[in-house]
Figure 1 (cartoon, rainbow, N blue to C red):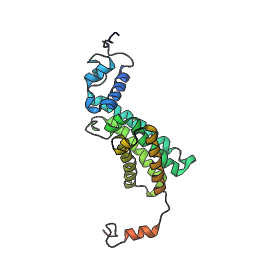
Figure 2 (cartoon, helix red, strand yellow):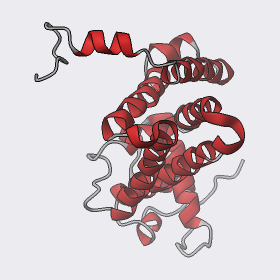
Figure 3 (spheres, helix red, strand yellow):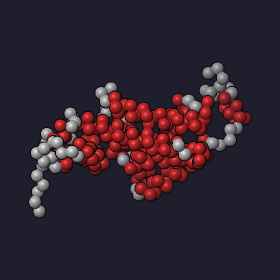
Figure 4 (cartoon, rainbow, N blue to C red):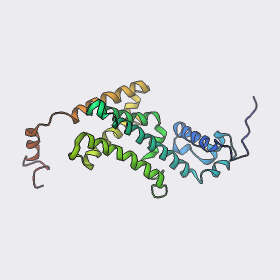
Length: 224
């Protein structure tokens, strides 16, 4: 079988996309440690210098993958938020959970680097930072849709911790070992989303809140 020779040109119209596709595949198979400009060129079937015509260094490739990852995540979260009018708050919460964790399950290699400034310095790559801000804005939008004037940065952090923690436990943790198949993982995500939604939307009990808020030994006591 003849060996494919690396292309001598860096001007192939689809070369930039081929480099990104190859880099994403490398992240999935070998992790970020296995992604180098030389290895990307080798797997893409081009000369060692070809990737440099489109990306100055490895970090520039990672930044582009991070930007696209956040754009995809923002789109998925926006689509989940947009169903509120016809589906209601509970289904919107469930859909948002599935959107976030589903992205991590489908693109674990990219997901692992998206929240690591050592992999993609937001000061150096403002486009990646802006894309991340758009995804984060959809999270805050969800909290406002559910809680109205009671929405806050703290509540947004609670929501984020729920979906991000679940994603990490599935992608790199014991839940992933317990549920290796994608279909089983998504069923788990749906079940977790339903339970979280039921908890968030449970009727408020002012007597229980008062007991917690004003117990003399509680760190939440008034004045502490």
